[in-house]
Amino acid sequence: MTTKPLHPDTLAVRAALERSQYGENSEALYLTSGYVQPSAQSAAARFANEEEGFTYARYGNPTVASFEKRLAAMEGTEAAIATSSGMAAILMLCMGLLKAGDHVVCSRSVFGSTIKLIGGEFGKFGVASTFVSQTDVSEWQAAIRPNTRLLFAETPTNPLTEVCDIAALADIAHRAGALLAVDNCFATPVLQRPVDWGADIIMHSGTKYLDGQGRVLAGALCCSQALIDEKFMPVLRSAGMTLSPFNAWVVLKGLETLGLRMKAQSAQALGLAHWLAQQPQIARVHYPGLPEHPQHELAMRQQGGVGGAVISFDVGGASPDQARSRAFAVLDHLQVLSLSTNLGDTKSLVAHPASTSHGRLSEEQRQAAGISQGLIRIAVGLEHLDDIQADLDRGLASLA
Ligand SMILES: *Cc1c(COP(=O)(O)O)cnc(C)c1O
Image 1: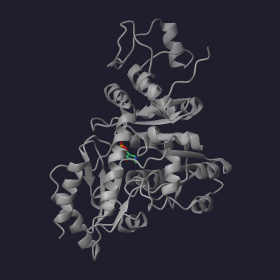
Image 2: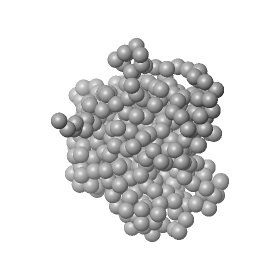
Image 3: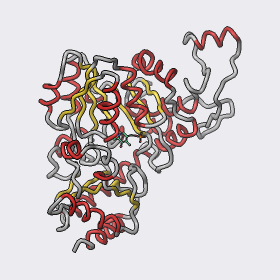
């Protein structure tokens, strides 16, 4: 009998390190900063990377390794390397792949801190970057230089849910001898596996849907074992953006319900998006699952026919100031949903991106990214859809 590869749903609950001698069914949480070595000879071999074995918790931990193994299995990559947060994963990505004189092409619609890190912090160390349209592939092509080493994309984006064509960007990257990294935070491997479209590295903020219950910070890069051994492990060893075993354990257990949560929360989001689109106080709804979304077809193809759990909508206004006070009025009248800039929780979260997650950007950068003052983002959770709708109805009614 041939063994068929296990389905992603099965890997989400089964892929991890071997059980210990105690036969625990739930994965063990190993809280230890150091490890006792079997012999001096072994210790030397382990530190020289010539023998498998844990040496010090900055470099590795069995619980963290279980999380890495399970996430890699779900993303379809050879391996993964965990980090203390999503931003730490991007830091590791850039430190591992770039040096002074190199060039990065990045969508201008990515997460605000990503723009600051790549454009600002790495700019200080002589890494050049060009920020281009999320959706116009020709801008990515035109930005390529002989020293371009990395293309960085996020899809769908926060908060406008703009979708980019991963396969087209992978093609541009590879013809230029560069790598494509994709932030898969919004879709997760349940809806979208960027490696299947040619991406080289998948970046995660485990803080969001992977944990899924708003408890801990975590991050990871999923890629080939060679990239981890040659580029990322050396950075982890010397820079120490290590994921704590406790947080790894929380996210590891979160992965077991990721499929159920993503499907349920996305179904709620689709229902809510249709309702929002009919409300007279709303100028525009952004959701990839709506046929009027500009990249609807691409999103459906790339995300297995599912739009995800994040929606944003614009309450408009005659001026930016008026738009901002309209958005604030809606938010301040909510009684059920949480006003919180996080996302990926079972509790529905609402936020005003222009004054929070994208508040550090200049007005010019914000406009380039399309983040208006009337924009509200909802990360749809697991409350009953009627209650979510009634709460938003209360907020919108305050605008009358
Ligand atoms: C939150 C987020 C990040 C950063 O993750 P942290 O875990 O908060 O560091 C990166 N990208 C996207 C799309 C995010 O939503």
